Length: 309
Length: 309
Image (cartoon, rainbow over all chains, first blue to last red; front, side, top):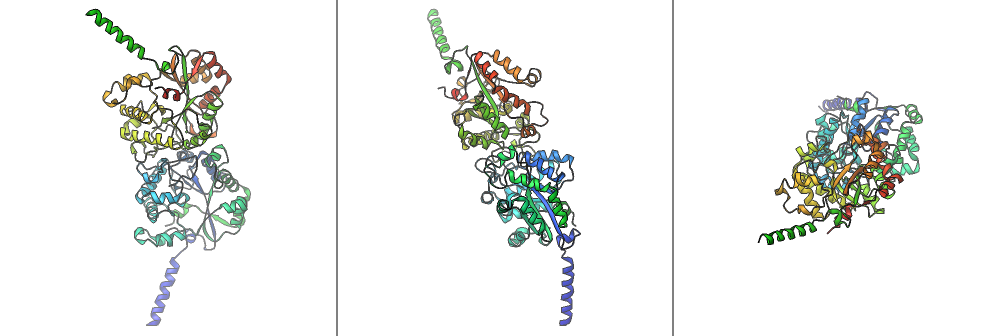
């Protein structure tokens, strides 16, 4: 009897093991392949950001972006993509407004908890978490998705500006996953979120098939320290030369260092106008392209992840 | 008895006549003086508009402006005026969003009637009048005034972007005058409004001393025809050489014809980026300044009008 049960246990384990494919494998790659999404956050933010991001995708090798719908310039993206209908564009759920002199408010008509005393969004995630109810955040997220669709975008994914969906309240994440499921595209989820938010609050995530979420292996992005110490070229060169197997989402920010962008990012020492120009320069450079090839890095998109059955 | 009543009538008429000073006279000028407010609408609209408008006031001879608070760049004006605390700046009540690719929404948290299906303001006054209740418009006007005060502006007056307060519902005008009275600054009123809106709807304007409103004599602005046929220089030269006595508000629009402004005004043949550059050029030119002097035109500001007892 003991032998039989051991055999049964081994059979089940083997079957389960066979079924648990990594996301990379589901995409048709092996577990050891190095897969990379080069994702430019923040399209829609400004005219400079729009034009540079599109150029980084059509002239460079950025292969995914996500749009900040509440910003003044989001509508221009709808116009630009008429000429580029197949770009990989998600909705960058935007609940904050981090710049000193350049502002935007929420898109949903009656979400006062998302607007600060100046009528625009709060500058940081903590203020959002303190003031915005889960119902308001869900309403705003839906308004942003609907607005993106209305300007002609077919969203390939959902993610979160400054991570405020993830760093806010667990209810925000529940709405985020619910909306992604409802609209039929993946939402960016990193492994840490699964344990600390989703599995920690099971009652909020009923109806979400946690084990089949398209959880990418890691999300990386240049830090202020990396920018100061190594510069963008140094940081990205190291990253490409040492990329881990699995799926990595590399979050970058692309704009031209011009009058408009200098004014948008004034008094911000990081993620500012020259930072975004440096990202543009690297991801349109031959040297950057060569690093991808030399390291046998495969570029994958959110659209491909969304197409997994 | 007839003689006595005639005498009494004459006395009353004379007294009344003596009391009815024109707005020019209340400012200390004579009825025949030519007084001009050179008013740059739309500061706050964009970075380009902000920098050019301030330059037209500090380097040129524009002497008044009004701010579009719901626009992304309004906050920057609060920063710029720290160095120019005495500029004449009103609140340009903004209920519409007329550009194709550059957007903004209402500032008040729960005024859905002021947002179109894309979450931003409607492009025209008719849509506002159709969708926005008087309560919503008053709430939004108050939010814009409060937001201006919060960024350090001491508003000198109130006026209306695209005239949508005037071309909307008479209740909007009632709120506009009520708020101006409450906050203690003048609201731009032109003679036509007095008869067609205010006196035509007396029940709405209770509490407003219609006969003592600071009604300016005329509001003029370059038209598309003038721009096409005479150009800005020709139009303004004719205007200065033929200015009527009394107070004229000349509404202009000042920005630099740069990448940002070209993109803001894309596909608009008028009030667009080169139009605004032409306004900047004229109102910072020696030739324009000479026309003011040669025609003995006195420049007056809204602050002076607001200071009339």
